[in-house]
Image (cartoon, rainbow, N blue to C red):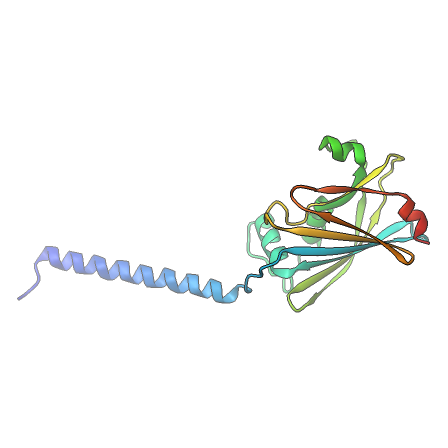
Length: 197
């Protein structure tokens, strides 16, 4: 029995919807296949050591590459692959706004103004290692005599269970701090700098 015009229209629409569905499903599967696998733990580890000659703090930070890709992608509004794309400037801008020293009074007040002295960052380099990203930079101390606070909010705005651990090496001793959404900063004792000689 030949199809009526209505049946023909319905069949054409179903074919069109099926084609759209298959195409969207294929695109979604392709994106998932290209994305790195998710990881169960969200951590970053940083080590700080004071260089007496340069009067700068040398920093090495170990981050999940996937988390860094996602953070920069959100900032830049396009997909970023930290291992392939030239985004060193954007990477350091991100770190400078999430990892810094400032007067403890400003940290307690949760207020940063144009007059708040902040540490300055100088990029050294980066390297990838099996899903991890190592970033190396130096921080100039903020120009203030006040007690300092170290802020590390890397990924905390994006990942609720993110834990950022910072170790300060001073000779044979090591001081450790842990930053989470509940604790964004810790007091940075200037005595550690005196011990880093």
